[in-house]
Length: 169
Ligand SMILES: [Zn+2]
Ligand SMILES: [Zn+2]
Image (cartoon, rainbow, N blue to C red; front, side, top):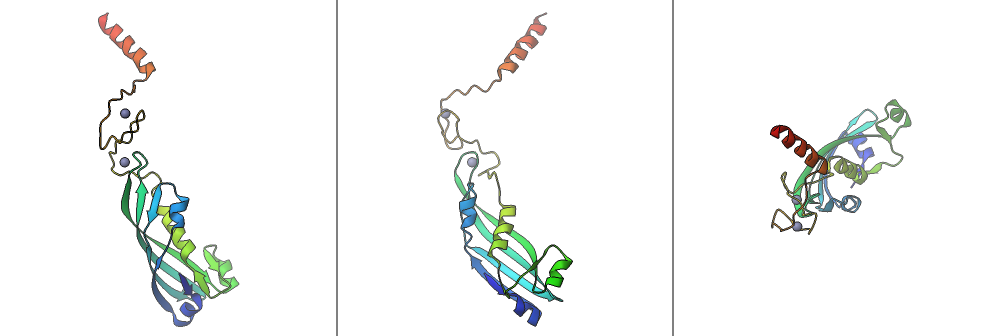
């Protein structure tokens, strides 16, 4: 998604919408199966030599549950602001102002950065997902299995013995 800073600085304000492919989000994040087209609403205005852009981003992400590996979809929305300028002096005034040599700026990397900031790192299909059986791999949300998984810590067993010993005295 290209937008023209010169146009913003010349006319005072520009609004633009676009749909972006952000497939790199899925290829760079193992917990993301795929991501729908990203809707971007850009509102840019001029403040002296600086072009201020406010963007609203929304899409749907298909995550892979970090416990049971099932796939589920979830909406994602976020907002971000970026500042651009064509004059070096204005860029020197603040670190967050990006100096650009060409009038047209590609917004895609900024959109991807904003999505990465709000992406879930350990997605769960439901908050109480039971996960997979560590013995046989059965999805415990869907089926039960006959594995007996030893969950008692041997140190707790010793403690239990001591406690019951106390009781008998
Ligand atoms: Zn799950
Ligand atoms: Zn099992």
